[in-house]
Image (cartoon, rainbow, N blue to C red; front, side):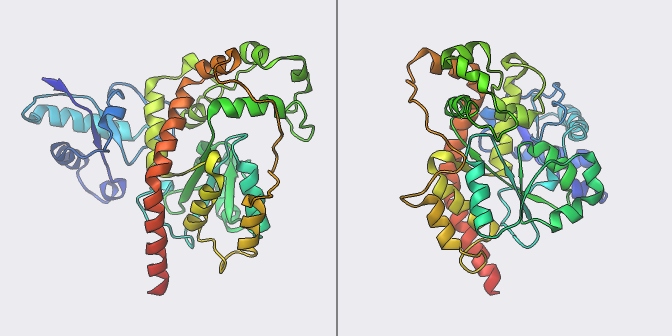
Length: 362
């Protein structure tokens, strides 16, 4: 007897139209449907309740870890696993309101949702698209906005949000889907930039001039609480304290969510990231004003970086760097995973472009 993790895709649209959920799940268990990285998801045990508010998945993937015979699945185990899966799908955020990366973009029916991780290139992208005369909305939505979500979407070309979980809940549904995009930066670099930036950024609500009294080492040791920012946002654990509140399950769900639902960019390759985002959103010389000029002015050789500040180089072998790294092990692993996805998505984005071109010509 061995423990196997089986990721099962449950199409809720078909289920709601009258299919037998248990039968469909049992069939998928036999077929062993699942992502290519079962080892990544294997530690999400079936008996663990999903974290409330996680945007990992409700309708697309649930992982169970039944005891399976090496030569097959017994009918009793199939029945038990199927029942467990159907129950678990009810507890996850409905990501049918987010477009899977496997689906070809359709800019005429999608609203881009750009997850703005602080100090990771979000301000540059906002400036870029405002340069192209695109309508950029900064998400500050609440539950009250659900009733006017259609009006909000109709008045913008894209939504930037520091909390994609909140935006998805309040502004989208399965009939009005979000195309999710995100730019990642190494978590330690992001925190170092934040430390120096907020010492001088009087225009920011989080302006912190008192940080001038600390060295980076002192700040990392005694002041900083913004650790594992990305995964806490995805898992809905923003206000739940420090590192100890996260689990390996949160990391696994975050990886799955990023892989299945986000077009990934990297600050270290921000020009190519923007070019990929432009393909997904359908922006080019024909659809965006001053497209080439705006791209060149933001990413050319003499570009002035937006909302950035110079600061001393920090030795990666130094104590301050190492402390920040130790505090952010989950986010670092997610970042390294995002780097891998960035490489893998290159071919997908190129195929998007070809498919979208063919669709326009038909």
